[in-house]
Length: 117
Image 1: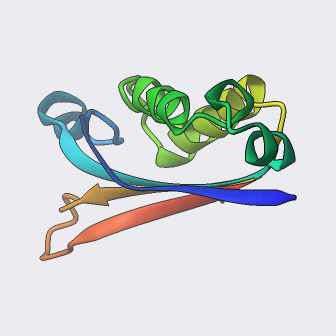
Image 2: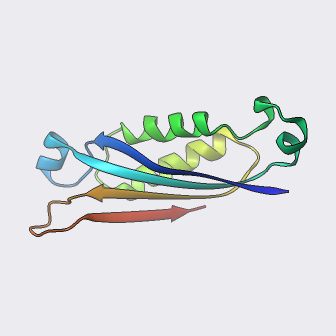
């Protein structure tokens, strides 16, 4: 049985970007995660130890978001790699990282990068 775990609206203040100001001043980022996993065992056992822990998934995402990068693609790849290393039951993952108010010279709500594995 496949389960889908979604973690929505994760907010982080981090220092990702190619411009010096982004690396110095920082910015707000929103992250969305969609994780497909084999969930037959936790569905039957009702034990957290058998489940894909969304707490652990959040901690992985938060840890990787705090490491400075020039590109959101690099952050997303690190997140995906860490999730797959931690959760052997993971079958598919999608991570969307949005940079709020990017410094592009105009009124822009966000730019986003979405990676799937």
